[in-house]
Length: 402
Image (cartoon, rainbow, N blue to C red; front, side, top):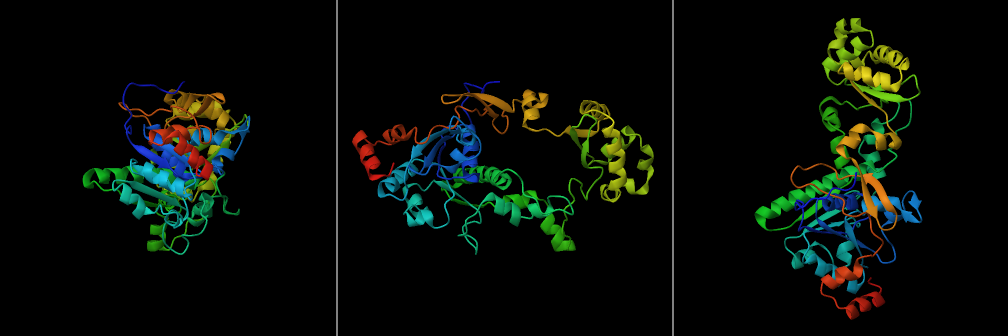
């Protein structure tokens, strides 16, 4: 399907966002705002573009990750450490609602662009500061990346096989969670501004949102001294819960978080007598018998193809899902029905298929208006809209500020 078009005004139309951030949490948060109508201006250093332009596979020398991360953003080059760049940023900030940045604490202040200077030109501004460790504390000035958050939060410690090493995800998990949290924090700050008329600073540490989504681990430790171990694909809270190989060499995942579903699964795989065992009545005690339950489910699934297993589980109203790689995702009928993957026309690469906007709104939907644009493609246009003359823009370029 193609990117949706609508005459309805998107919900964030009229909101201006300056994206000063790089790799990946801050820029992704700005992307999410742009997807629902915010005007997002991506500010990049003239000689050091956002590194995401060079991350991962490229086509014809054009980074594909940037096409996703940079969508719905106009691009402006600006050296914020140069006097001319600082002046332009302050002029932009005066008519901006949100700035997203991820410099190490103190960097903007060193350039004369700290909160006090920004608030002076725009008291209604929301400044979202996204860093690895936050704006204070003993680690605040360390380089911070999502990998470190995945390590420090406890995620890696509980991920992997019991006898294997702690395992890191092969993608930007902590960054993506922090991006979601940042977009939420920005909207919360803007709601507060609606009541008070004043902007504020959002202090987002990437190490924190991932800790939140890990669940009650701190509470368990505080109250019980319990430290969650690595359990592979199993769970200490229910069973059977694992991945199982099918007769045609595919894999499926089964979950039995609900007692009724666990009972349906055991009837389906021909082991109804296990339901009568005293330990079967609770997820935690079923987990103590995971070997027996996994053996029953795994044996049944191993004698059927993926489609046969999925169809049988669906008819039994039991929970199963095929384990997809990206090829399967692109063809899955449920994703097709939701429009999860959409097509965007790009002047550089032609039609591109990528993830659609994050959620569907019935009355004011979001849309992908364009994919990531070339470095600095909109610089002159944005500065002209700011009131700068052609000679003034040339002077900034000669200074190295653009």
